[in-house]
Length: 461
Image (tube, rainbow, N blue to C red; front, side):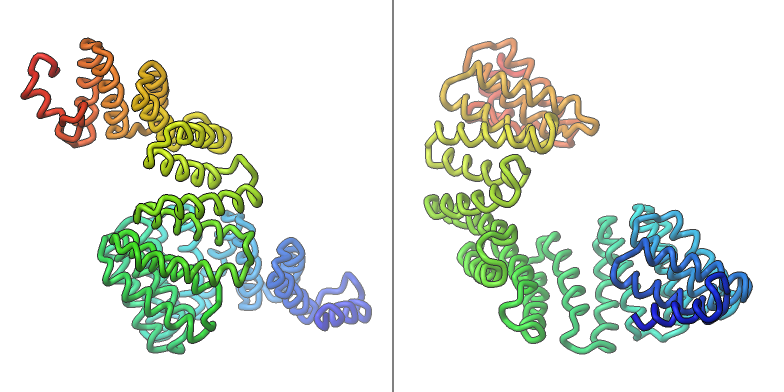
């Protein structure tokens, strides 16, 4: 408000059309305030006026011009207008190198901003080269142990993670963590982010003990800095619980998920999507523990919340319906399983389209239920429809196609249709080989494919 009042007074004294360095500075400052409020249209309007005025009064190579160029570029970046942002970032970089030298902090920051645009476009090679250059300039300007260096290391680590180069990502994240531990408070939230980034990679590699160690350190920092009931803690607890779940430590997983649920309910109330997600996770743990009734209760509570907040036709609703159907199938209640699988299929078709992978998976399960009930014609209908979707996909999943053909072959075997059975199994073997697998991966009426071919060579293709 003071900046705006200053602008009004200056223009009243000097005239609306008057240009001055002071007015340009005030325009730039007011634009910055609008940017911080996320009012980007207003910010850009003021930055454009300030930039036009500064160019006229100071020339294109002045550092004040560069400052407004950066501010406008940052605003375009926030709006997702990446071409405009990149053009302004490049102009800033040119001025900064010319006026400040090639190894200045501002040069490092701008290289990082340009790398981020390439990163967002998934132009990973260009992004990596600029992050590396930003890192070299930053270290030369600021030293190896500086928050700006740590920030660049973490962004480079994120890029390497997205590329799937986990070894390099861990190396870079660890270097960033070393910097953060030296230059930031021991309870700084950036340390938590880096710890969880490294933990995520260990989790994906199946190195669960290393992952748990890092996540537990992150939770300890969060509890110290945020208190024991902050919702951010529940996210880290959920990651810990998932590791216990994946390592089949179901009792530990259940305890940690229940703590996360308590925090989220206290913070958000019962009608919250994070609460619903935690209830779904608890249901999955209970299912693995064969506590089917309790799992069903947890899934139904999650379903009620998601339907209330997302409507009946959301993908996340389909996930819960699928889980409920699976429990019914597990306990031998085929009729209820069929009801929920069909509702899952309806929602998936509505939310995801007719040809989505999840639609195929649900159709396969419906086919299997029909097959178990001896309704072989209905089973074939679903399997064949699933197969058609799979074979016309832009990037066919050969293993999944082989599994569907395996289902089809088994149904024909049950019906005594030898020719159709052999044709289906022959195609299944073909797709298995394309997927890099062998025929032992196929199961045929209780035998694997290799075993059946040895016992009944006349039936084997």
